[in-house]
Amino acid sequence: MSPTDWQVYILECADGSLYTGIARDLEARITAHNAGSGAKYTRGRGPVKLMYQESAADRSTALRREALLKRLSRADKLELTRQLLQQHASTTG
Image 1: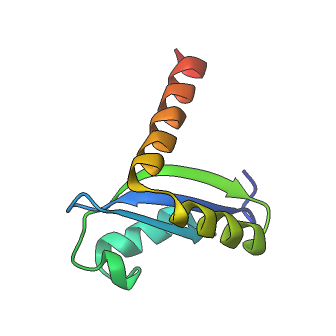
Image 2 (image 1 turned 180 degrees about the horizontal axis):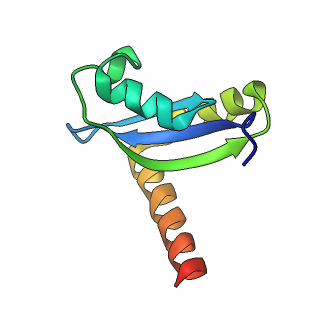
């Protein structure tokens, strides 16, 4: 991952809801969400936990992917995170 890459991500909030966003520095963005200075939606819903992330070459691509992910149902978003975990487990174990 290049430092100029954008990240599309899905967070799980403490209340169980899911939040989808984009960031250039994902670690800093998650810190902001947990500090209450991230998106309005995540304020008061922290702490948040990273469930899914993927790289995008530029902001425009990240925004398009974010819009697509936001249209998915909760079940589909959870399935996406499950597939990612399964994929990761098969490559590391």
